[in-house]
Amino acid sequence: MLVCRQMEALDTAKIRQDFPVLQRMINGKRLVYLDNAATSQKPKQVIDAISNYYSNYNANIHRGIHTLSEEATEAFEAVRPKLASFIGAADAREIIFTRNATEAINLVAQSWGRQNIKEGDEIILSPMEHHSNLVPWQMLAKEKNARLVFLKLTEDGLLDIESLKEALNPKSKIIAVTQMSNVLGSIVPLEEVCALAKSNGTLVLVDGAQGVPHIAIDVKKTGMDFLVFSMHKMCGPTGVGVLWGKAELLEAMPPVMGGGDMISMVWRDRYTPNQIPWKFEAGTPNIADVIASGVAIDYLNSIGMDRIRAHEIELTDYALKRFSELKDVTVYGPKDPALKGGVISFNLKGLHPHDVGQVVNEDAVAIRVGHHCCQPLMRDLDLMGTARASFYIYTEKSEIDLLIDSLINVQKVLGHVAL
Amino acid sequence: MSLSDELYRETILDHYHNPRNQGTLEGDKVLSVEGVNPLCGDELVLYLKVENDKVVDLAIKSRGCSINTASCSMMTEAVKGQSLAQVEEMIETFKNMMMKPEVQDIPEEFEDLEALQGVKKYPVRIKCALLPWNTLIEGLRCAESRASGSTEGPKTVSTE
Image 1: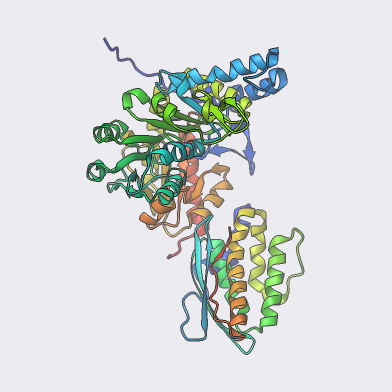
Image 2: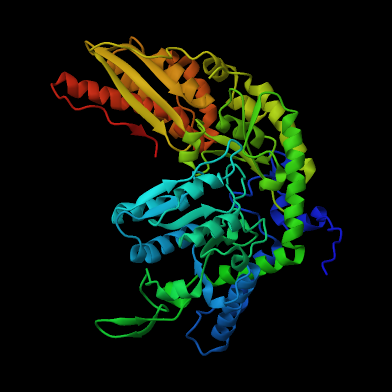
């Protein structure tokens, strides 16, 4: 029997003590870091793990027989099963390390894509994809004379499922879609997308760069074929991306990069590839940062993804209320915090987002401004860009208050301009 | 005085709120050059009319941030009616003022343009201030090659 219990709220004061950078003063004021959709801050546990590796057991992996190499190999490989269980995958061989989520998408496009996409085939994308889940498919489509098909958004900025039903046909080979928009915050109903895709024989690649750090995901239950995400947006270091794919798909895919580690046997004129996952990991990997990524996963697990999601729903709800009190502001994307992540994209009437970002920085408030690597979406919305505040485990309501105060000051400093 | 007060001080805000020479020019002798700043989305079209080695008229149709809009406005005021030699000197002086750390000797005719020096502390936004000037350089280059009979059109100027 399922027992419902009150979820304990996050102790942000305690969490904040783990993040040294949150003590940082800027222009004489304490940092208010609201740019988490770009990258999260790192807890000292993760920072220490990197230092510990280099200080105590730095060695190359997979080939040494000395103590340091064995320790490094063991620590590195221990991260794979940890990541597999974090996303609900049964098999650690399905976890491939890349430099970032972008590289993981490129890997699928260039390996699976080149092998399986033929002239006239269709690749389905949402109109709110980050450039990283758009340009690799443009490159593939150009090479193969395939076609990119774009779904629609509802007025609220949610994925229009009807447009997917209309788009699917025998030529639809893959749907590449975000779990959560980095601009609008919209959460995509992945189970529905995957069920429709499956009944059409179409694969689904999910860009989890924005979603995985904030929302528990289960690749098996959801029924996707590929998932990519990036550790630096989830308390981990930069330089580690993850590709998860179904083992049978990965086994059938050719390697993209050649070199050490990805081979089994090599002759002067040929080679045989290694098993998965190493088949896709040519060269010395980012050992220190992969090991530290495992510590980041431990850190998130110790808090609990369900509590993280609940915390962010509460923050988003609060932020939407506070924004509604502002004059001359437009907030983009869904207004129901249950349907969106902790991302508020907005514009102040008559003001360029870069000016807004610059002035709030004087109050030590760090937000993102610009097109957020989503130029086609900006064009759809007829915007030059937006300002964006995004939250994470250490964000407090008082910081949202500081942002709002700062925005009121922006309107005072810059005044109104008819654009 | 906070940095943002310094950055957005009155002169810049005045040009931002009331940009001079904003609009388009028409006619056979008018050259138009596009400038874009992909980083923050500033876009402009510079309309330029050069006759007898003089910038007889110019206008800019722009959509951008305060720094970009103000720089466009100030540049058109400073350059209009000046000889090509004077304009080239101004371009050189402005670039030096924005790119070099030490405060340069600012010529008198710069008046308002001097206010843009505050942007130097914000390296990412120097591009916003330079865009109209870089677009002007392309416009002048094109005007010169037209004068010597070439039919080559101007290239879009991008800060990236």
